[in-house]
Length: 301
Image (cartoon, rainbow, N blue to C red; front, side, top):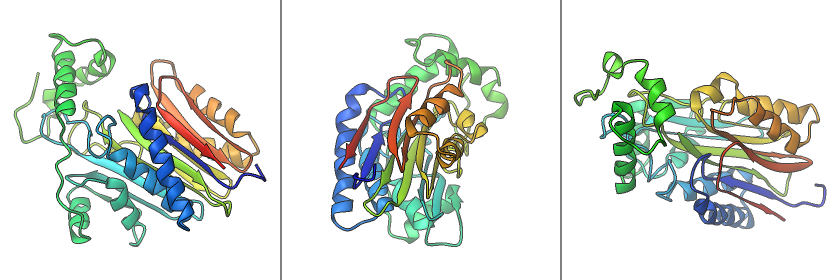
């Protein structure tokens, strides 16, 4: 690793179609362009994640999942550098690139800005109004509702629907519409100066109430970066947050565990029924691990 100038890892979300690997490769190229232009690891991770947000095949930015009401899209994003700087937005609406808004939070005294405040913050800083709804998102929402109602579907949403249906959606319904009867993108970077950064963005889960916050904007859950490396996670947000996955894997790096082993141990923390994946870069290597198909790319130079 001493001879390596940089490492860039990107992913399009665990369970996302493997055909998205081409976009992950372009996102890695975007990050390399940021490094070549004199940017640090943080700028590169942000550039890669913004590129992934623009691909409607992924559940982040344009392409984010519609919530249960079929109208609402709330997005989370976070960025972190190895010097401890961190910024995140939660449940931000109608912006094209939530990760760019999260980066601006780093310039405030806060760590996280959420909900209507996050959207107002974006507008104040000049981020234009953007509708992220796509026809593909509407089609996914239709299949998800069919699974929730138990009147059809192709099986892709059966397990998630069962967990949410057990709560009886109508009891906790908090949308404006009438009641009905998880993926993330991210990047980790090591730059030529040995600095690390991680960034992630998600459109959240269809099966979630309004205002639900997943793992992405929680420091140490979805992402973590420090002097020993950087980690970005993807999967079921609540389960990732319960295990503080990114910080746990990072702590193993700090203890001298090789990135490949740390990544594998991180994924092994979860039962097979829970989809999860991680990107890990350390001082002595890098690794990508998941228990499902996960489009990804890496550049090492």
